[in-house]
Every structure is written in structure tokens, then in C-alpha cells.
Length: 350
Image (tube, rainbow, N blue to C red):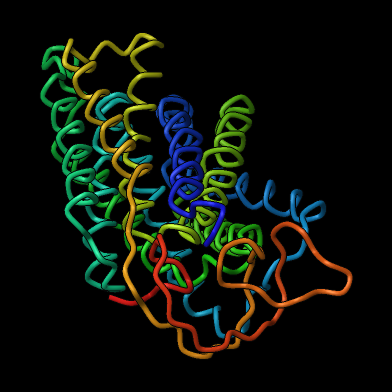
């Protein structure tokens, strides 16, 4: 039926999201020392909002945000663009770049659990094995930390703060899933703008000092790539493979951050890093090669979302013909079939 695999494409977008996000953690750990945690969060999401608004000028139109999306946007902005980055910045100042990056593995665990609890996304044996491999990779990395290298900089409160950040981002990831078929740049711009406004006001009230120009530039750049472009890739992945699978593949982000921190001189890792890398690779391969198919029924439906005409679900005609992904209101007749699929907008069955 479909000539394009939603699973393979979704995994690719999730990897891009993970790499662009994970690479920023060591930079944030450095730049955040010159800015308070609230100012750090504000600058990160100001950068994300700026890149989303800039790209929106050149992007092809997709399904727009609706008035009914506002309550959800406010919640995800508070959780993912205010609480989470503030907690991360505060925690990184007390744990260091490598340890902090490794702790971000918890986000994948929380996201898989919340996606199952809230959206009832099916977690088969293959996905469970992939998630377990990635969790084991994170644990192996954590166990390989040289205690002397961590030193007094690693505190229980710092660890708890970063764990809290991962839980807030996992909640953000899960609640964002219904917005995955809206224009991702609109979602990024709205969420980032709300979050930046909230944390800017909080930073002013808290009396945080102004960081250096160098730190401001670094945090804005990190926000544009690791929180703007990364979120866009994340939403594109969720659109194709759902919240749980996207969150599990995203677990490679901590390894990316830890590897960069190690290369930059933060030697808090032992030889077990290679074994952890193999476990992360195994998890990604299991996702990328996953096949899920069974006979299922699609009831009649009218909606608006990005789609292609070679995906086995959109056979309506255009005059003139349209090739590639596009968005417009369209109707689906009832159909019963069997094909490889992921938990996307057309396959929300349990």
C-alpha cells in the first residue's frame, strides 16, 4: 500500500530532534553559570521563538492552531518552556555537564510511561525492548561516572532538579501529541513565546542579574537549535510514530550531550561509554526496523492535517494534481484494510 514508511521517517526526525537538543546541554551548563536559571530559560525559549517565527515566513502552510488549542498550549508552555528549562539550568549548575546530560535519559522513560497512561499508545515487545536497551545504556553511563570527577559539584538537589525537568518535559511531550498535526512552526512559536514571557517576568521579579553578551548569544543560539528546530523535528516525529516511540528514540540526546562534554574536557565518564553507545544504537535500530500491522477499520472522518497521496489513506483527487505533502480539509470514507502503520492521527486504536 504505502510507498513510504511512517516508522522509518518518524525515527529519522526523532534522531534529528535528539541530536540538536543533546548537543546544547554542555553549552547551557557553561553559559548558565553567568545567568540565573530563570534568565537561562527565558533566553533559550526566546531563541526558539525567534527561529520559528523566522522560518514561518518561508514555510509552506499547514493546519493552523485553533482557539481551542490555547489551554493546552498554556499548560505545555508552563511545563516545557518555563518549569523544565529553569529546573535544568538550576540542576546543571550543581551537577556539571556530563552528569546532567546523562540524567536527561529519564525523559524517555517518563514519556513512554505517560504516553501509555494518557493516550493508551500500544507498547509491544519490540518497543519495550528498545526502551529497555536505552534505559540500560543510560544506567551504564551513569555507573561509569568517575566519582572523583563528579566531586562536590554533584548534589542530590541538582539531580532532583534535573529529574524534575525531565518529568515536566515528558508531560509536555505527551500533552503535545494532539498538536502534532498542526503547523509545527506555529506550535514552537506559540509555546516558546509564552514560556519566554513567563520566565522573563519571573527573572525580573527575582532580581536576576544580566548575563554577559557572550552568554546571551550562546543561550539564544542553543534555544534556536536545541529548543526551536529540535521541537519542530520532535513534532514531525510524533506526527508519524506517536509520543512513546518518539520519546524512546529521543533517549539518544543525553548520550550526544555527554559525548560532547567529554570531548570538551569533562572527564566524568569511564570506558563503559562504548557499551552504552551500543545499547543506544540497538534501541534506535529496533525502532527503525519495527513493523506493526493488523486488520483494522477507519470510520468516516473529516479533518485537516498534512498528508501525502502515496500513504494509502489519501486517494482524493486534486485538479491540477498535487505531489508531495500538503494540508487542507478533506474527507475519509469508511475503509477496512491491513498494512504497516504507527500510532499516528489515523491509527489511534489500542
